[in-house]
Image (cartoon, rainbow, N blue to C red; front, side, top):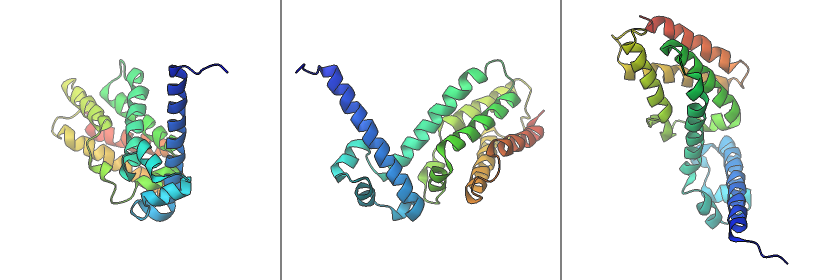
Length: 198
């Protein structure tokens, strides 16, 4: 029998860890959807995934780390999606592009996971995130270029945008995704842009 080289072992271990992480993630989302974030324990997740608790901690530091992975994926998705789309666009066009990709991110994440994210104790809503910093920069550029009003602080505009988008996401979740979230976000950002235009 041919010996497996170190690279093959590493790849196999990584694949196994990735597969295990996905199983844990899927089971955690299922349980959190039923019992809520606070009502779901690591022990529950391990029982549902049929794994020892040690395996869970090899993949995630804590239950909150599962949510963190969703946010990290989302920030990377937004960065990658808008990077080329923003080139040569005005600040208003960039905000509309962002609205489209933000909606698409929620659709791809799926309503079941989104429902888990929208619980009142989710601390990640309080964190400043890369996508918020991205929008802050877009607004600052728009002000400097004379495209946007300067009498509203950029930080406040970012808060308005995320209040609107999170509100749309929340409604999308409680109404069982019975409306087109992309069209709704695009129409809302268009209305806000009319207010923000210089």
